[in-house]
Length: 112
Image 1 (tube, rainbow, N blue to C red):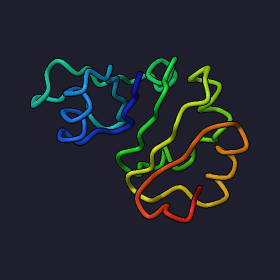
Image 2: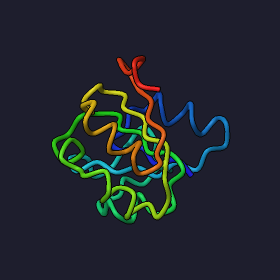
Image 3: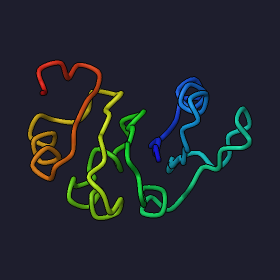
Image 4: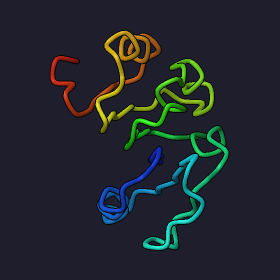
């Protein structure tokens, strides 16, 4: 399952085209008129549960301040983390990697 953390419409449509199960969270959005079938969750822990991939689509402070161990605990897995906003520091990326997560993202070509 893929979890999108704050979501651009184009990304969700792309993921769903390939039959991905998309759950979304955004602390500032209550409803998404353009994609009525996607519920914007308010509980980040519930949104992340059982996630195979977590996509940070925007750099809200709530996501910037999220500890990697907390994300892993909420997902109950070692999800791939994708940073589309280039806000994860190398230190944070290394924490994710140390927990067994793969990390990819914009401006992250130096991370392997």
